[in-house]
Image: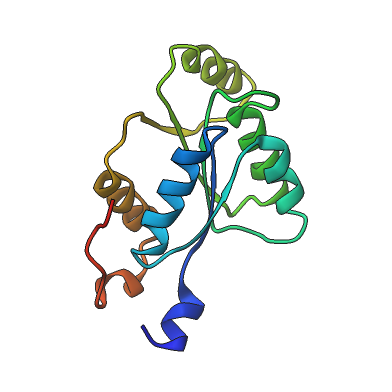
Length: 141
């Protein structure tokens, strides 16, 4: 990958309080043309965006402390151009999303477990960048 392509790599924060999930998803994204950093709480995300502005936020919904929905709302207010994908495997997600919708916030949700190819495909469509069509690495889970 050329230095120009690296400069164009979409920057993503992956947030999940389950470190293995955040680390694994960030690793998969990094191996597939993105620049991804794992974070382990909504609070750490808020701190991180003081320094770095992501193109995309992928966050779990149900986490200890700040929920992913609350974090997503705060990121959308601070960085309106940031694309946001939520993912969850818990039933409590519906209530959190309904509350967000009632307050004028709508987010796309992916249900856990989500296959890496599904996330990569969704990101490609979301970002619609030419860099993805050039010499992509194979999906490595």
